[in-house]
Amino acid sequence: MKKMKKTTFILLVTAFVTALAACKQGETYGEKKEQERAAIDQFILDSAIVVIDEAQFALQGNMTDAKRNQYVYMTKSGVYMQIVNKGDSVPLKDGETANILVRYLEYNIQAKIVLSTNMYDSRYYDKMTVSRNQSSYNASFVEGDVSIPQGNSMYSTYNTTSVPPGWLVPLPYINLGRHTSPEGVARVKLIVPHTQGQTSASASVYPCFYIISYERGA
Image (cartoon, rainbow, N blue to C red; front, side, top):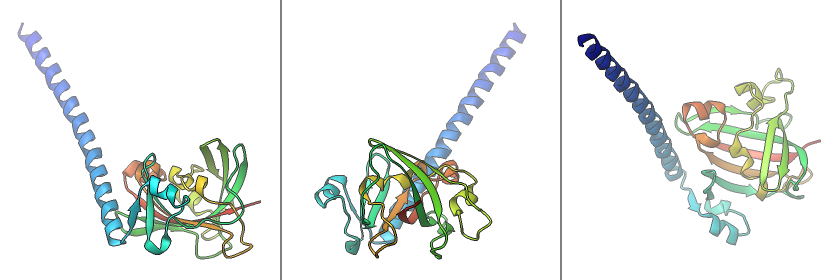
């Protein structure tokens, strides 16, 4: 009987410890999400960003007023987006697959540091192959010569061909032109939560700010 009581007690303690550990893990993730939300809110405040909703965005012709520092909050993804320049040409068509050359700066909002960039030399870019199926977009980085300084920065920094989902949010609203005119290349600014970010942001739960240009490649 004593042995049975002892066994029962051990099982109860084990169950309690397991439940407590699971609870703490949930709280830890919850705390990280709260910290992320606070960091985004503070960044919006410090940057004097004017947030508009998708209804207002649609009324403005799917554009944001960069002079007023407007960002539209995309409810489905949680991404805040400012279209600085829509670009010329046309958006990616339904059923189309294209190479897109991307120049960007990536800034960790919480740590307040630049994580990676390739935007300071026009010779460098990250190339991603993007396919559109109706409203769905799939993308992957194309492996290139990672020995080139600041070339293929996202691929070499995170050692993955996975494109942050947040980078695809602007695609329905921008045109994929080339450097044939000052207005040829689409440019956006994004606030990307960890759920839409690169692999490190997703794992560690931190938001990033991006300045990105999109150019149609060969």
